[in-house]
Image (cartoon, rainbow, N blue to C red; front, top):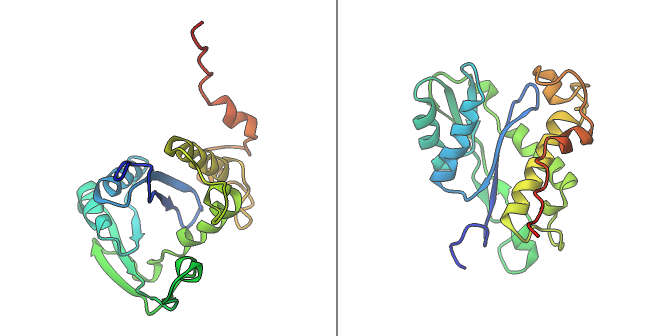
Length: 202
């Protein structure tokens, strides 16, 4: 069981557009170089022009962005070292965040506009995920028991977020703001996209 994907730590990779709040790409996987490349490659496949990208200090991002975009991107890292202010044992140490010591911005590729280097939007995105998807609620029995279920749950959440949910600052859905939709989708429209269940053989 140990080392098998779906047992132990599982990460959700998320890319958000700072202007439209559209979730451009997401991936459920491990936090390693292979999944970093898969995630960044998927993101790049959905873009039609040069962009500026900000990631945290996870080094796997640097290799993935460099291998996927080459020089055709303006890329910066925002590094936030945290102190362990809850040294000791128990849930307080496990679930309470440390304090950010300082913020360091590093231009990695191209010519990123450093005043726009930020991870705040994607960090803020963690709140609606936890509030809207019980599988991310801590210390409950609502977690996914199978990795396939987790993937489906994340996909449904972000589909609803992009196409059904009006963003307060936009007054439309993110999909409408970027021109992917002309109206607010009803949940029935998302369900209609699913493949019809196959009948079991008699």
